[in-house]
Amino acid sequence: MDRDELLQCRDRQRTDFTWVDLRGQDLRSLDLRHCNLRQAKLETAHLELANLAKASLIKVQADGADFSQAILNDVRGTNALFNGANFEAAILNHSDLHKAQLTQARLTKAQLEQVRLTQSDLTGAQCGESFATEVTLKGAQLTGSNWSKAQLVRADLSETNLAQCDFQGADLRSANLQEAILDGTNFSETDLRGAKLTWGENPLENAIFTGAIMPDGVAFDENWQPPQIQAKPVPYLRPSSPPQPQTLERPNRFLLVNPFFKVPDVGPKKPAPPKMIQELGQRLPWTGLVGLVCAYAGWGAVMKLLSAPMAAIALILLGSLMPAAEIAAIPYVPFIGYLAILLSLAPTFSAFIAATAIVVGLALGISGKISVGWSSAEAIQASLWCMEGVVSVIMLFLFVFSGGSVSYASLPIALLSIFSTALVTLCALAWPMMESEGLTTKQRSIVSFLVTASGLALGYFLWLPG
Image 1 (spheres, rainbow, N blue to C red):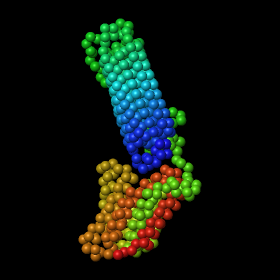
Image 2 (cartoon, rainbow, N blue to C red):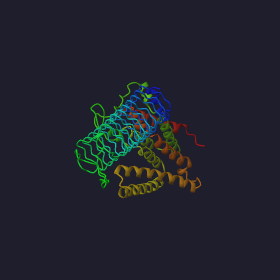
Image 3 (cartoon, helix red, strand yellow):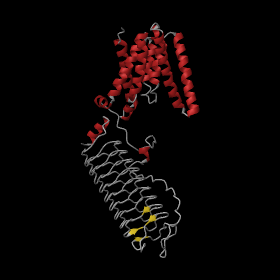
Image 4 (tube, one colour):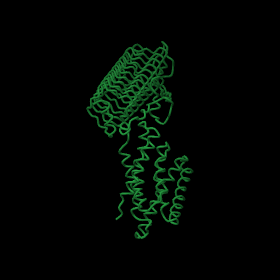
């Protein structure tokens, strides 16, 4: 499988990629959240800036893969192979990497908060400046690994092989190092306040503590000896904020977890606008557009049943152009359709429905803004949805309790308007999808007008009342 095939599968909402072979593929910046990549082959694959949050990487083979600045929160990666992989500045918070192979891996400036790495092999791994608070490394193999200037507050390093490890300048406050193997381990300038260590007969001969702050809070010197009785534990101090690494050629990770935080000239670029009709057709979201044609066909049938004036039809055509004109007006489209219906009904009946809908809608919007704290846009949107619902309910209610004798509240009109409203709402994502595909405002306006006009014509001219 290559990148294009993977993208096609993701477009079809596929998430199961068990045993898939993606060795050496360019998968940068892909959205692979919740995907099942169990036992997948990802050797030397490029996954920079990819989002694999909550993905399954159990027994995955990813030796030499590049995960730099990728998001791997809540990943399940037990027994995975990441030998020589690059996780520089990656986010792996709350992930499970039990018994994972990470020899010679690079985790510089990575975020490893509450990561489970029990019995994992990190021999020779480069983990300098990583943010690894409350990481669990019990029984792990860390021989020759580098953790200089790392945040390891409350880390569990019990029963861990720390031979030749470098913790220079690291923060190991309240860490658990009981039964750990300290053979040439470098703790120089390390903060060990409140840490738990198992001291042998010659506690200082197997490790380097030059300039360190010892577990009892005393600066190390050649005469320091471990206390016979453990001193009162040092209160837990919250570590500093996680680093926010960024590079010149790649955007800050903050943009990945906050996609609406806009910075000029940063992040993925929009594709160039299509220049040929064939290219335009390939980028259009046909499923959503066909649904909108059906929705507007329902409005066309309603207009036919009501013998609507041209002003009502013109209102619907005008409303369909609002999303294409870069106005966030998804709820306005069916609302204008209801205005068209009211223009086609008897004046007294239209005034009654309009007054009721306006009173209820405004009451909801104002109460939401005051009591819930909605913004003005949210209050207006909620009011419009409420008005549409009120109009639908009144029309259907009057038909049922009049036994069908009220000609201007016929059942087909009520059902068709409700159906069209729901369908417009479901298919409204076609507008932002066209924008993401690079269509210009003019191109989106033409498409929306053609969709609306064809739907209205289809419903108006093909409706055959029984």
